[in-house]
Length: 330
Image 1 (cartoon, rainbow, N blue to C red):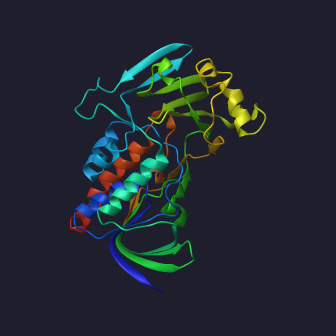
Image 2 (cartoon, rainbow, N blue to C red; image 1 turned 120 degrees about the horizontal axis):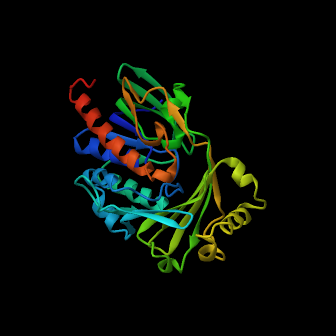
Image 3 (cartoon, one colour; image 1 turned 45 degrees about the vertical axis):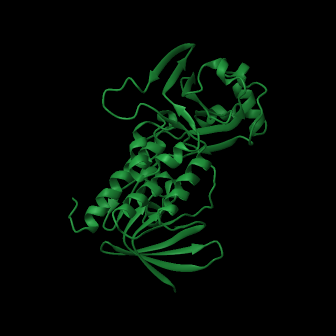
């Protein structure tokens, strides 16, 4: 079987994987990314937080992302029973970025993966991991591409940034139930020509629909807005019809949405995600470290997904570099 040798193998080409790979590459080590899917691909997590900007900047991605003209985000608005609590990122207590972006993730993630390849990091798409063998901190990973070709990648270290794929936890039985309750979301992208009437193009709006259900409203610079309901599965079961009929019926029950999106065009049929909460027995071990959603995913009300992914990879990559340079990391 064909075998390659790298210093660091990164699993996953999303924001976590590309940030980690860029920082390892900048330190002079040979790094490769394998990604199970073909980009662009759809994923949620579209409203960023200012903290992730530091990771994107250090990874060398800022100029490429700025060039895309994404919707700038300056804060977050929370609405409950008509009452509004509006947060502006400029009212911060520490130094740092006071703005960020709202991004269609299929496009955003493709920009990052393209940029890391321009830096000289190879990315092998449609390549899945089927096995990993560790010998101390060294490892041999077996991968298979879309044509069924199998090969091995020997590495001194693995950074698992595979997101919901959770490669290492699943291969080594490290999964454990989360202490967060199971949740479900129904969401879509919709044309939003009247968005300026609602004075919220530059921030996310979170609406408390009822005690156990909340809504995200995320406008993009394209005139498209992402709208999603998050709640217990039983909430969605009370509405009938196909996904579009269900989402339209739910929207009609919410005063903050019904006029704005009553007859809005859906860009795609509404999608559902559920049961995303999962934790792991350990976040690191001899020869590997887990970053981003591989460790655990919080309720998206916090808009923390991409931030935790990029910042955890920023930290992990630097620790991996120090260990590869001979330093013992405890």
